[in-house]
Amino acid sequence: MILEELLSSAPVWRGDTLLLGHRPRTLPSGYPALDGLLSGGGWPGAALTELLLDHHGIGELGLLRPLLVELGQAGKPVVWISPPYIPYAPALRQARIALESMRWVAPDQPGDAAWVAEQCLRSGSCGVVLLWPRALNTKMLRRLQLAAEQGECPGFLFRPRAAATQSSPVALRLLLSPQARGLGVELLKCRGRRPGAGTCLAV
Image 1: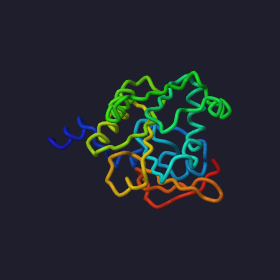
Image 2: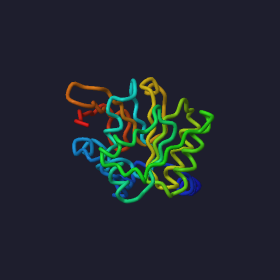
Image 3: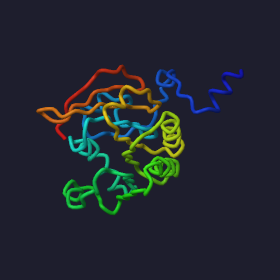
């Protein structure tokens, strides 16, 4: 009885919920091959996704373009926190991303970026939160994951490939790499899926 009370009151993910048909909300990625790899057929709608890569500019934003277009058309704010470069408005407009839905936040102190992301995720008013953190410990990752669940908001963390060796409480981790035919995507962690599966997307 005590165990059941703990499971019902704490943010504990239970594997049997998938078997019982209680699937978490997902958002289509816009790439059928990727949706086929992901549990529930799309991005986690109320959880964190880590995108791990060697360096910026390999197509990681193209991977999210269909989602950003859809959220912008729905009028839901897309929050960019500490991106490595200032978002380029003409390129976003050319990609059919609604500029009026974009919110760019650049905290003065690097450590404030995670706090800002936590507040945005928990608020329930954002369509998606994109965060480029300089460093994150496991405790902060757990806080961000919980905030995404509470606010029912998807969050994407852009982190270096080296972070793949660290444990992470997020729902989904993808390793991204440039390929001759596009962007390589490999599952490192996905609820309800085995790691190792991958695909190449023309982003």
